[in-house]
Amino acid sequence: MKHTISALAVMGALATSTTWAGTQSGTADSLTMYGITLYGTVDVGVSYQSHGSPFSDAAATNVNNFLIKASNKPNTSLASNGMSISTIGIKGREPLGAGWWGVFQFDTGFLPASMTLIDGLHSIARNNGVPLTQQKSYGDSGRAGQAFNGRAFIGIESPHYGTLTFGRQSTLLNDEVCKYDPLSCSLAFSYVGFFGATAGTGDTQDRVLDGTLKYTLTHGLFHGGAMYQFGNAYALSSSRGTAYQVDMGLAHGPWSVDAVLAHKNNAISVGGSLTAAQVAALSAPGSSTYGLPVDKTLPGTISDNTSYTFLGEYDAGRAKFFGAYEHIRYANPSSPLSIGSQTVGGYFIIPNNSTFPRPKVLEVAWVGARYALTPSLDLSGAYYRAMQNSYAKVSCSNASSPQCSGHYDALSLVLDQRLGRHFDVYGGVQWSRVADGMGSGYLQHASFDPTVGVRIVF
Image (cartoon, rainbow, N blue to C red; front, side):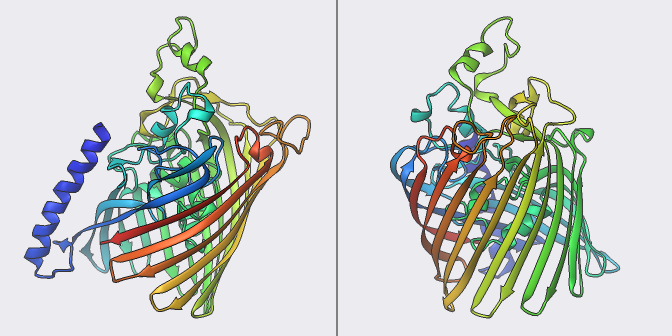
């Protein structure tokens, strides 16, 4: 309820001030006054899963559009954020002189179907102690109910020297993955959008990082950037470790290519909820987890992750073609976390610091295209495949353990009709299938999931 009230209050206050600003500026379509712009997106629809899980008022889409462990029975439900995250925020760009500008941006993501802030970790904690067959939809996320769960940064920019910003920011890897994804990281249709490991150097929480210094530059054919996260060395960061990323790209004629190197220490992945036994231990005197709150405590896999990614696009006019490949290596952390360590949103972690007897390698690749059927109607399609090696002490290639080798396939097709500058309707379908180690513990191993929705952007 707290998050619901906060979201409504923020949006109501901003909407009131925006109406006034638009009137004062004299431009009916403008939401800018004194260099400050109010912006936002509202994306809501209806989703069906042939094997799904019930509606959640905290998960990033309210439902699980892709196959997860708890996916079980047919489910039809209102859903949020099928094509893009519903967001409300402010941004600004002010002249500083000598060609320099000051910039800032603050926003938060919400769920229009439930009128709550996105809180992925709460969607998992809510299932603590609940049998898998009865769990509501859930998903790990760096959006964990914070007031600004999206971006919150300030900086300076120059047309000649680039842009330097500091704060909570989308990573370079996340920027490039979404740029080269035919479905632009759609949560309902894109594997790399719904599962954030690809864009998060192996873990969803790290798509957006606190306490980061980020630099980007475009010069002629070249574009690129670098960023560094100070981690727990800096008081404003809620992340436990440091991170760095480097991006180098070229754009020439119809071609654009990028390569990104990324590393994250103490990455935290929350793939599921606490068991009934773990919940009981929270209230058992003498237990190592005694006293931790049930609704704020989660199991976490801790690792040091390194990835390299190659991405490309060819623009043929009405058609655009995309392709990418990422190699992610997971290793046990060089600095293990202790029980009760905190992560984003103030959640407590019961860590597993020894998940990887051998380094795990996850490879993710995709190909796809976007075609303009008319000036206002786009058809997009993509095929995604994720593959992991066997990282158990004794190699295996079946579903007996999540440490066995395995793969995950997803195929999507989407129509998007723009009805004006600020409004579009969309409909599409994705099919997903999981096999061997990547499907260990799953209730079902394939799902067919159509979604239709509307989106307003201002």
